[in-house]
Length: 482
Ligand code: NAP
Image (cartoon, rainbow, N blue to C red; front, side, top):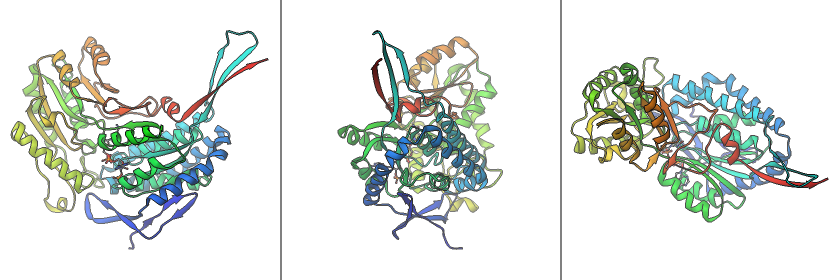
């Protein structure tokens, strides 16, 4: 069978200029899922111009009518649910149930923001002056650039696209090169839902060249980025020089604090789930378990035993728990940190190697790895690895655990496992992270409330829930004497 090709989408036209890059299945690196049209800086400029041309009509269309198009796109994705989910497993490697969960979330995000079309309220306040009526109307920001990572290749594009569109902005989307198909499927659905030409533009290709072109594109008014700290910090400089509105969601090194009074079995399950599911490639994954001394040894033993039961393999197989790393570069990064961990903390208690037996040799598989006896100052306790590697750190008590959890510069998500309600509240108020969970895995957020981190993990307004509307809209305030 011929390998399918996936064009870019600019000004309502599907465009393929003949240069392609491969979208590879990380579970079977010899399987090419598709060839994507390789966009250029000129394509980005054209896409930004198309978005600028489409802006006035889209911004002036009433918001419920914009919402109707988002509902329609959601229905199209829902009809293709099985196919779109399988695409995601094949391009990113996560298991099919995880991919289905993400596609369901994408559909829900579109419906949630479609509904906002009927609620998109401005502000009204009483004036101090007689016979003065004052109000603020909500306006779109303009042409918005969206840059997304590969680990949630559908949900992250969705949680940027849907609020941007409902607020009346037009968009240039640059997806991650390692997993562009899931975002392409959303654009395909929007096209079929009769989104007017130019409102959404999709350009795939190398982040460096396209990112530079996007941030420099004259019509651009705002940029929303999710990805690594290095790229985000560079973008921040470039975007600030142009006074673009900017939103950055970046790396994490998320802790799960486990106290001696926790429900032991649930704490083990939550920690293993957050550390290893989706191959540890969730930005909210736990990579540090900070465990109270009184249960430390028993807890490490239980983590190791539970991890031993996890089956690593192709995410399309129904008995697989953990899929591959997304590509060779990510595999190399994970193996590098495992070597660093060996030097710092000694042999891992479980895992620590690439898996190559049988069919696993075709993909980028790593055994889920646990290092015990990790000190807070070690590299594997401080730097994001973004793979199935867990560092277990000993803490004297809750205060010590919270201190360790907070002493790194990143602050995306954090979890506590405890039955002590006072500790829960001390954690809620004292933990320096934007997303907290209690007696749940650190990963696993919904779309109805604000999402985002603090400290060096994030910059700018939060995403998702009602908060998302603030980034994608502006106010025009009116004072009216009658
Ligand atoms: P990445 O390398 O920073 O890439 C993210 C996106 O930026 C990709 O589309 C990439 O394109 C593009 N890019 C690369 N260089 C660029 C440049 N110079 N200018 C503009 N764009 C550029 O990150 P990743 O490896 O895809 O994702 C993993 C990272 O994302 C982790 O650090 C993870 O914690 C973070 N993440 C954070 C959140 C959150 O909400 N905080 C959520 C998910 C992931 P190419 O793919 O073509 O290189």
